Structures are given as structure tokens and as C-alpha cells.
Image (cartoon, rainbow, N blue to C red):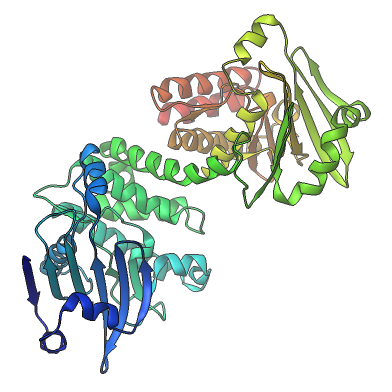
Length: 495
């Protein structure tokens, strides 16, 4: 059988002499970090030294052809990581030192390989720092140093023709004592690709994945801009203009990655049991609520129309009406959507209910840092053809609706700033609100709160045109408030 090896460490060379290395590696005692059908990562010791060993087993023809049909080269051995680690050493990017590689087999579907590197000790991943809230103990200037180093590594990779393909914060290791002056190491390069130049789509995948891995933690928009200032080696103003397309594509990819598992969780039609949500369905109904409102959902669903009749009517229009009520010690709004006409019924055969649109849109907007009504659940009733009624249940919020707000100069300035941020964040997720009149926004504690999301939609194609319509509509709705109208126009023109 074809066999090839390169061992750069005398201790490892002695360790593997006169034995089959592919038998020996499974006899080594150590801590297994990952194990799948054809992959194993193990940490082991020889004397006082510590190593990491990665075994790549046969992947089979199915996996080979699956990758080829996607126009991707399958990862069939440890050689991509071996070459990438050697390249990183040339570039002075800190990474585990490659010490040995052993392979056998010529057929890519049936080959085996081993790579051994020096262990990086002691260390902690940046993801672990964020998850454990240790980042809160890091001073602002020290945090900036860490962001700068991550950006420098990412920039150097792409400038020198390397795309990582798993560029997440869990693969950046730093000092366990969080010393910002210590080096940051990059690990897990088994899928890395080396070229003369990284194609834009692969750079977008790397940076989009990196942004995604930091979402949901205590990182800020300013932290994101600091990263890009170093990555592009340009000022905020300069890269916002010159690198806008790349920037938007990275952010869009990050949000799509972030939302994909969440959209599966909040899908009312799914039969999969979800950890954070409570679902039920029957022959003519289904509902989904946030898990903490499980008891409220069980009691509300059978009596929802009765509860609505006892509440205070907020709006009663053709197609829907809204009531405010107290139920199970909760102050809630219930919005009921009804069929308006036969043509409306026909249209509903092919579309989601407006309650479901609002439910999903709120999660998209919240992911981008846009505050919305706190929706706690939705209920749908249906017959053999289509849904008949749907209900949106949300918690009451404090604050004033914008059409009822007394606008001082100070509030007008804050509103203009809030709307600027609102539209910027809609642009991040390629969304449009669809009904941006001032009656559909609240203002509380200097924060803008959006509701009436039942025509909101993600528009991957031509989203900027829809966003412009949203901007024009909100400006028109303030035509009687000249101060805020003027401030909004000024803000929109500068963007």
C-alpha cells in the first residue's frame, strides 16, 4: 500500500519507529476532543511534552461525489492542514507547530492520514471567553487589542491566499489568564485552501462566519467597525464607501447563519420538539409560544375569543382587530386576523398567515438589534383548504406611540438618530418593514420600538428599493411635524 510520511521531531520519530502508526494511534491514551465515523482528534503526552493528533479516515465515494457535485474539493487527508500550518509559520501567524504527517492509500475515498502538532498551552478560545462572560473582566483597551489581533490574522490570511473555511472565534486561542499582550493562535485548518489569491466569495464566507460566531454575545457594533478598520486597513468612513459590497455580503451571511437554526425552532408547522418553545397542534389548530409562557398558552388557547370579548378594544378594522387585556397575571395584546373576502381567502391559500409573518419578522429584527413588540406566541386555526383565523399574542409595552408623542427638540433629534439606526439594521438583514408610518412605532427610554410587522419581509433581491420606500413613507407620516421631518430628510440623504 502506498505510504508517505514526514516526521520533523526526533521524539515522535522514535515513538513511531518499527510499529504501524495507524495501529499505534488508537492505542495511545489521551483526551479525545472529537470523534466521528472517520475523524478523531486526541490530545496526548510523551514525557513532559503535550501533542495533538488528528486522524483522517476513509470518507467513502459518497462523500467524495457529494463535494464534487457542489464544485468543492473534499477534505480527504491531513495534508491541507499540514501545508496551511507551514504557510502560517512563514507568515509569522501563530499556530500549532506541525511536527509529523503520515498517510497511506492512493484512492482519495479510502486513504488515511495522521497529523501531529505541538499543543498550545495554556489556552482558552475567544468563544469560551464570551460564553463564560469573562469578556466583562477585560478592560476596554485590552478588548480592543484582542479584536485588533483577530483582524490582523484574518487580513494576513486573505492577503496571502489562504481561506480558513472554519474561521470562527472558537478557533482563536489566547492566554488562559487573558493577557492581551500574549499571542493569539489560530487552529483547525484541516479545510483550509491555499491559492495565489482568495476569491471574494471565500473571503465573504470566512468573515461572515467569523461575525456569526460573535453574535449573541456582548460584542458591540463599534467592536465590529474596529475589526473592519484593521481588516481593510482603512478608516470607518473609507471602508464604508469603498468596501460596502463586501461588507454587506459578510453581514448578510452572518445573519443568515445565525437565523437558520432559530427559524427551524420557531416554525409553527414543524413537528420537531423544540427546547425553547412550546408547540401543540390538532386537526384544525396549531400554536407556538415561548417556553416560559407554556401555562398561559394552555389556558388561553381554548378561551381566546372569550378573553378577547372581555378586553379593551384598541383597533377594530376589516380583517383584524386588537384588544388589550389582563390574563394569567400578564398584561397582553391579542391581535386577531380574519378573512376579509373571498379573494383574500384565495390569496391566503398560498401565503403564510399575517400572525406567522409577524412572529418570524420579529425574530429577524431582534437579531439585528431592532426592538419590537415582545411577541410571546401565535395561534392558527384552519380547515381542509387553508387557515381561517390567526392570533398574535404580545406583551404590553411601556412608552408612547409616535402619533401620540409630544415632540420636543431633544426628542426629535433622538428619533432621527433612532430611525437612522433602524434603517441601517434593516439593511443588514435585507428586510423592509412595509408599513413605516409613525402609528406603528413606540418610543420609550430613548428607544424606538417597532410593531405591525405583518407585511414585513426579507428581500434578498432589490432590498434597497424597498428600503427607500420605507424611508419615504416614514418621512411623509411626519409632514405635520416639520422639525422631525427636516431631521429625517437630512439623515436619509447622508446615508
